Amino acid sequence: MTISWEEFEKVDIRSGRIIAAEPYPEAHKPAIKLQVDFGPEIGIKRSSAQLTVHYSPEDLIGRQVIAVVNFPPRRIGKFLSEVLVLGLPDADGNVVLLGPDQPVPEGVKLF
Image (cartoon, rainbow, N blue to C red; front, side):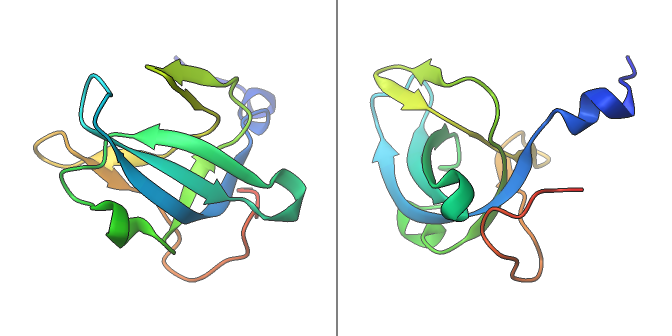
């Protein structure tokens, strides 16, 4: 399946910094609840991510991530996830976060 450049441009992918992280034991699969700061234009948004194999909540604080910020919110159990933090599966299918390899401002849009 291919998409047009115009369709891709509709996906709002931004940098953010994790400012809070806590275990989410009520989730169907082990997850961590995140609060991510996307700067003054977008603000702080929440997300739930299945990151427990490679990351602890403490390790995530201050980490820059990449996320889709214009999907509609999605309820995950009792938690409302507002953005999709992006990651790739490792060889065992566990999530490895995507993030810039150099510091970038919070809220910078992928282009």
